[in-house]
Length: 494
Image 1 (spheres, rainbow, N blue to C red):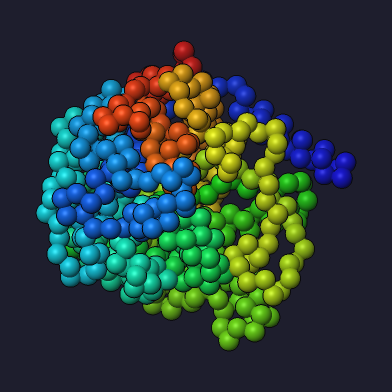
Image 2 (image 1 turned 30 degrees about the vertical axis):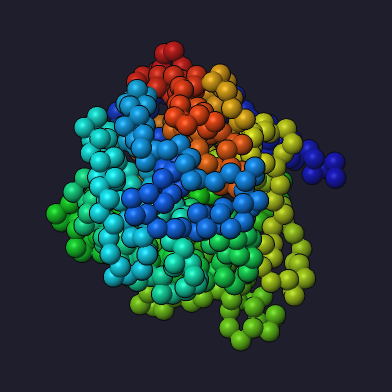
């Protein structure tokens, strides 16, 4: 026990030493800064102008206690009506681009392939995108950020292979209607949360708890849907529109809990089961071998006739491989990873298939979110892992930020951005990692899923008690704006 404690303290102090003095390196001239939101979290207008119902509308209305304080996104930040104010905030920040997501249900109220397009929904997104372009801000558009149309969920949702065709129809519709204005497309945001948390652990809508089966089927359909959307764009739109397509995949950094080979193996297994689950089929080929081997073997021992992890055919592997124009990463925090002896073979589930003990250090700074502690050195290690694992691709950081309980003076957020960006610029300048974009989450306080409005991630405060949803700049917005204008984290860069 004493040896393990010593190793943990040593690992922590080494990591802390890398981030406790702010880098004097300057972000390269090509580097771009942005801010992000997502449709259900900010738009409101949940049933206006022909919008259909999505799974978050459904669960918050039929089971209000599913979200803290019985909050919902019916009005949220009211960005549907206040998008010009949002763009004015972005212009004041000085960002190069704005990452936002589209509501599938606002564009296709019935969701299904062949269903009619809601012209008012398209008009809203064209107006928002044009307002951005008129103010010199590039749109970065996410097609899907967790808000499946409810009619599609009633057909089975993402574990149903039929979703591939419905998503392809939606993607093609969006490329046709908005592709003249948008050059950066993200097919899915954090698919692990859609699948593992939505169909496996029940902590995201639609709140199913069939882990070790439905979450794997969901992923299988979703990856094939991504590939289909990529090929649709590549073959039908890219030559005329000149855009680029990728998928946003999230991970925490997994640090070995000691210097042992077993803990190093556990940490690598954890990131393969997290980022690699989605990244490997798209960037390399097929699921990570450690996932295939472990789930195949455990399924066999559990008496299943075939593996619980679905198989891609050789044709599908080749169709999916290479369907990316850049690698996108959402990253917030870190875990220690410690080797575990094998669990009860009768236990069917993702966590048992992974079989790694994950924990956080109590000395890491807390946030308002139980899952998020401040670990700046984790970002540098993560982008280095991506660079090494996937042959130095272009990397976009598509989300990074920290939560608090509110207030205009937010020194924790300033320190968070300073230290995470410090590690990022060192990874670029000193390690040679090809990161070209950084996106702050979030532009403003918004609906934070199961936590409702209790956790605040915004650079701007939103008064959710006011019918006007008044926005107020926080101190962190001024800091981020200064970083963008100077490309520097300190008073004078080298």
